[in-house]
Length: 302
Image (cartoon, rainbow, N blue to C red; front, side, top):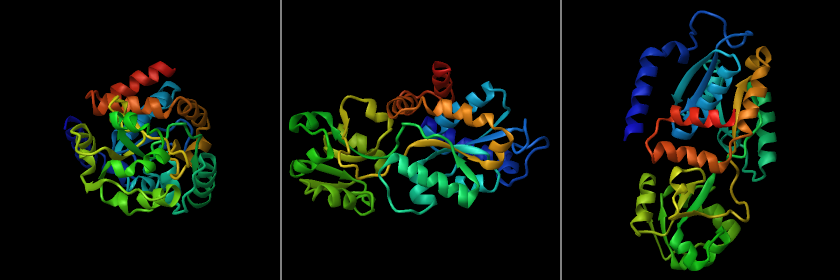
């Protein structure tokens, strides 16, 4: 609740006080397209993206750049904001770039996904993808650990074998969308659950904790996954496209400030699925402020 209130206030303040940023009317002074100009670092409106964007902002400030933070931009409009020069860079996910922005068919090899989005963004938008990190916030399946241990379930192949013994906590949409159950069954075979009930996504870990279900869809960097009672299964046949984190930057900004590439690539190399999950947990479970968590992480990798 604390983070939700904080985010709501941030959105209101951004709308009231920061209209000049989101309408392209920048404050007086050099733009980021000029050497030495202010760099507008943006984030999407959820914990993980805020943390990563703040780490990027800290690294740029440490390298001598002046940074303006434009955080909590809606996922539906942030790419357009970058295209229209309202922001200069933000953390994006290779799978999002591939499927949602470029509207390409799914690809499961991380390097091929990256190469595709890098080429596509440059050709269509004059936007550069810098190096992608090993942190992958992709689709996954979580099982209660006691259930995983009882049946020896470690992979999605294992899960398919024991589906008839397990209760599935669906979010409805997952049963129908291309990267949900249809993709799973096309690759692994039918999942004939003991039972399947639809729950709100925000309740899935509570449902599992209360022993009302055994299995649920998850994203691979969710903070609750640090808890021992949950086991994230291995996608052993690679059915899902990767969602590796990487900065996307306007070409004009990189041309005027080439040092940005070196600074951000160095930071991205430090992100892993494991440490991003831990950072998310510090905010979403422990209640720490994302900026404090980002600062602590950045200080540890300098």
